[in-house]
Image 1: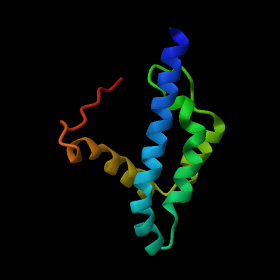
Image 2: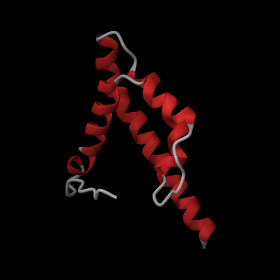
Image 3: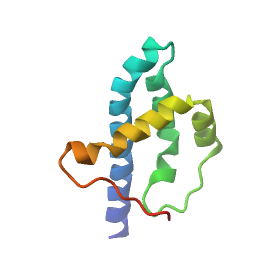
Image 4: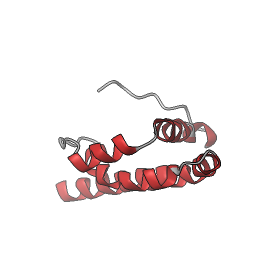
Length: 100
């Protein structure tokens, strides 16, 4: 049962990263027009997958911290903003995240 739950959690994290990368395609067009490459930055975030697993006790690795530090703030913020809009675009309630 624990393996099944961890497999689902890994799949959820992997899906989240795929969605973020997919959303970055739109953002990448804007970033390229402004001289940067958001897509390239986002692909480096895969090293952060263990940290974003729900219920994970993992702390971000130095590789994850370096990938985030190297990102353009606009790229990361716009990608998160776009990702947060997905539920309403699917006619679902907006995200309401706790502070845990």
